[in-house]
Amino acid sequence: ARLRASMDTDAEYHLEYRILRADTGDQRLVEGHGVIFRDAAGTPVRVTGILRDVTDARAAERAARAGEARFRSVIETAGSVILALRPD
Image (cartoon, rainbow, N blue to C red):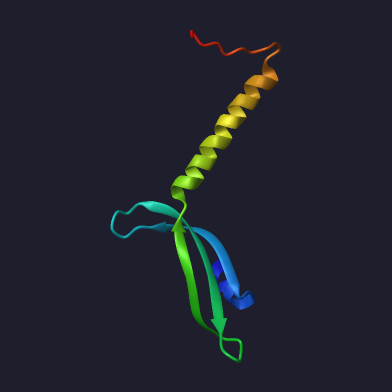
Protein backbone atom coordinates (compact mmCIF):
# COMPACT_ATOMS: atom_id res chain seq x y z
CA ALA A 1 0.00 0.00 0.00
CA ARG A 2 2.79 2.42 0.85
CA LEU A 3 4.69 1.56 -2.33
CA ARG A 4 1.49 2.11 -4.30
CA ALA A 5 1.06 5.52 -2.64
CA SER A 6 4.64 6.41 -3.52
CA MET A 7 4.04 5.33 -7.10
CA ASP A 8 1.07 7.67 -7.26
CA THR A 9 2.90 10.70 -5.89
CA ASP A 10 6.71 10.50 -5.81
CA ALA A 11 9.59 9.72 -8.11
CA GLU A 12 11.55 8.20 -5.20
CA TYR A 13 10.49 6.00 -2.32
CA HIS A 14 11.93 5.20 1.10
CA LEU A 15 9.96 2.53 2.92
CA GLU A 16 10.48 0.19 5.86
CA TYR A 17 8.39 -2.96 6.18
CA ARG A 18 8.36 -6.54 7.43
CA ILE A 19 8.80 -9.59 5.21
CA LEU A 20 8.72 -13.34 5.75
CA ARG A 21 11.67 -15.22 4.28
CA ALA A 22 10.39 -18.09 2.15
CA ASP A 23 13.43 -20.29 2.88
CA THR A 24 13.43 -19.98 6.69
CA GLY A 25 10.05 -18.51 7.61
CA ASP A 26 11.88 -15.80 9.59
CA GLN A 27 10.29 -12.40 9.86
CA ARG A 28 12.73 -9.64 8.88
CA LEU A 29 12.57 -5.87 8.79
CA VAL A 30 13.74 -4.41 5.48
CA GLU A 31 14.30 -0.90 4.24
CA GLY A 32 13.56 -0.16 0.60
CA HIS A 33 14.93 2.76 -1.38
CA GLY A 34 14.28 3.29 -5.03
CA VAL A 35 13.33 5.42 -7.97
CA ILE A 36 10.14 5.14 -9.98
CA PHE A 37 10.54 5.78 -13.71
CA ARG A 38 7.56 7.03 -15.67
CA ASP A 39 6.69 7.29 -19.34
CA ALA A 40 5.73 10.54 -21.05
CA ALA A 41 2.16 10.21 -19.77
CA GLY A 42 3.37 9.88 -16.16
CA THR A 43 2.54 6.19 -15.86
CA PRO A 44 5.06 4.19 -13.77
CA VAL A 45 6.93 1.85 -16.12
CA ARG A 46 9.90 0.68 -14.01
CA VAL A 47 11.10 0.65 -10.43
CA THR A 48 14.78 0.42 -9.59
CA GLY A 49 16.00 0.17 -6.03
CA ILE A 50 17.48 -1.81 -3.19
CA LEU A 51 16.23 -3.69 -0.15
CA ARG A 52 18.41 -3.77 2.93
CA ASP A 53 17.82 -6.04 5.93
CA VAL A 54 17.76 -3.72 8.96
CA THR A 55 16.44 -6.24 11.50
CA ASP A 56 19.64 -6.44 13.56
CA ALA A 57 20.28 -2.69 13.38
CA ARG A 58 16.78 -1.88 14.65
CA ALA A 59 17.12 -4.45 17.46
CA ALA A 60 20.42 -2.84 18.51
CA GLU A 61 18.75 0.60 18.47
CA ARG A 62 15.92 -0.68 20.68
CA ALA A 63 18.40 -2.26 23.10
CA ALA A 64 20.42 0.97 23.29
CA ARG A 65 17.27 3.01 23.97
CA ALA A 66 16.19 0.56 26.69
CA GLY A 67 19.63 0.70 28.33
CA GLU A 68 19.60 4.48 28.20
CA ALA A 69 16.11 4.56 29.75
CA ARG A 70 17.22 2.27 32.59
CA PHE A 71 20.31 4.41 33.22
CA ARG A 72 18.25 7.61 33.14
CA SER A 73 15.74 6.12 35.58
CA VAL A 74 18.50 5.18 38.04
CA ILE A 75 20.10 8.63 37.84
CA GLU A 76 16.79 10.48 38.16
CA THR A 77 15.60 8.46 41.17
CA ALA A 78 18.91 8.35 43.00
CA GLY A 79 19.10 10.98 45.71
CA SER A 80 22.85 10.89 45.93
CA VAL A 81 26.02 10.29 43.94
CA ILE A 82 26.53 6.89 42.35
CA LEU A 83 30.11 5.66 42.05
CA ALA A 84 31.31 2.75 39.95
CA LEU A 85 34.52 1.39 41.47
CA ARG A 86 36.89 -1.21 40.06
CA PRO A 87 39.27 -3.27 42.21
CA ASP A 88 42.37 -2.21 40.23
